[in-house]
Image (cartoon, rainbow, N blue to C red):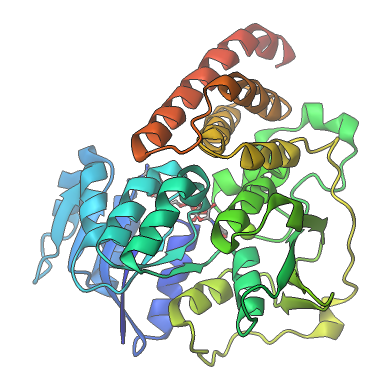
Length: 396
Ligand code: NAD
Ligand code: MG
């Protein structure tokens, strides 16, 4: 039985991970859980999965959580705040930590888990994108494994099993195209938050759904692939594949191409991240190629979706630039969700902040440099959005 800790248990990744644990109680056991602020769901999860330790990030919710599980015996250790999340990440005999926190908030807990010798089932891509220059050496130093749970990176990882070192020539990331894939470019100026949150193929948290609509998600995944698989940016390509059946492909040195296929269901990459190198037999719907219908592909439209090129540029710049890109994106998406900026402002704000960081890009950043770059980029986006304020009010 594998002991696992789950960060971000109340989110999309978190609840799907717990579905797997509930379905395979012989294989997996929960040691620790953390969540942001959803006491109702977290307390249900504590009752069902009986973790030894739990943290709620919002300290104001701790008392409510204590009351909600007061009748439980034995009681889990209950902690609060960011430091509580870090404690859970490194606690006890968990072999693997599933990172289902959204955003760069996952960075310190992930580092704590690595230093405690735990393998990482990585959903929280922002952590690797912002912290790659710090996280990758730690992975090496502590000898832990990073098992990708993002569906594209899981696909690449699955295809790579058995490929000798040096055999990989190119990575081809597939993209669904997001909420606006069939919308003409001139209509993007008017789209609303509700429009952007309607993803055609996947049901996910709000932030990644907006990232999918801007295609920044794919840009972030290019950087994620660079740090996970050590590929040059010139050898990572994106192709639009609206059906989301092929989850990504690899090309080998001899031009042979391998792909991983499946219904769009995050439980599959999550299960493989937890069971690797084993394969667990499931009763999930099997892929039916006839039912899945035509599989089509097209070139990404960089004019309509400038975020992909912004991400390639930030990845190539390296150093602290990916942290700036990521933080600027997180802040811009938060402002868009609050209806304070428009959809098209997202790439504009990010580009401005990345341009401004060029002169200060720290080539080999330490953790403090990354945290400082993250903080600076958020402030810059907030300042930039104030300048946009009057125009926004006139648009709405
Ligand atoms: P979500 O918003 O549904 O859930 C986020 C979880 O993190 C929640 O439990 C929330 O309480 C917790 N959380 C939020 N802010 C926090 C903070 N500051 N500190 C501690 N905990 C906090 O998000 P999601 O869609 O599950 O995505 C999680 C991560 O997985 C993201 O990095 C995303 O890019 C990645 N991912 C998600 C999917 C998907 O299908 N949802 C697919 C691929 C990758
Ligand atoms: Mg993905």
